Length: 354
Image (cartoon, rainbow, N blue to C red):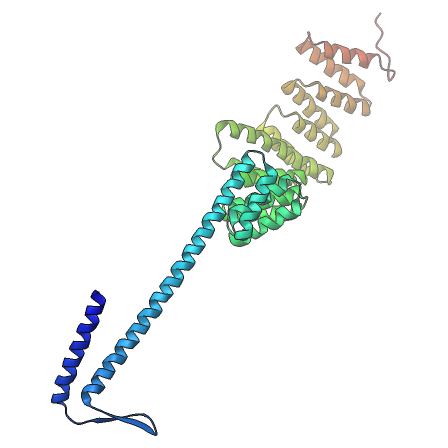
């Protein structure tokens, strides 16, 4: 009703204005709309036509804008409803996974991705499920697609790294873990996994470098002590690998480094002794091993000394070593047993007593 009244009012106003301007501006204006077509209009009619044309253009522009808003709103609402459905399917999938209903979870995540193929969380979870099922190629495909959507998502990159490692694509796994560290240098989960992967590949120097980075991170006292012990072991492994490759001088530095960190670390002493033996420094090797036994009391070192002295043709030295050990620990039956076994060997005769 109000709209109708407004229209009538505008018509009346336009008629009054037209009559008023018609009286003030008699005569006519010849308006051409083409080279051969033209019309004679009064000045008032020209004004009204101009006003009407302007009003029509405004109405068209407003209508276009409103239509655009209507289309955008409809599309946004449609996308919102679709997103809500995708999220609902994803939540149901996670609940099914937590309830050990793996087949149902896979189906729900697949339905979620059917609606939105780029839903990162569904790609991540479904990929993890396929990895659990040992379907590594599909897990890798899904996690790589998720990485395409979110290039710097650390969770996705870590999942992809695990896929590649368990799929025995170790070099690709290392590249992915290194990519994580470029974005997040202090990511502990990545550092631990990279350290373990280097160790699996027997790349001991690289594993040791990562271990040094781990010890610079914020660890609890318990974790720091545990990782310090791992550092000692990795230091030894680097030395053992260098010794195996014919670099005794470099190996010796790592064995000494392991011993410096842990005075009770038996492999370090044995490795250092083996290095000296390979360098022909058997006397120094014997001294090192005897010193190691005095610090650790480990019978394994005495066995190695026994081999060393017997190979050198010096049985008296190992007998002396056993006797000194028994003097320090007279209640140790193992020492007496091995000394007696040594005496009973056919290599030499037990000294006679008169």
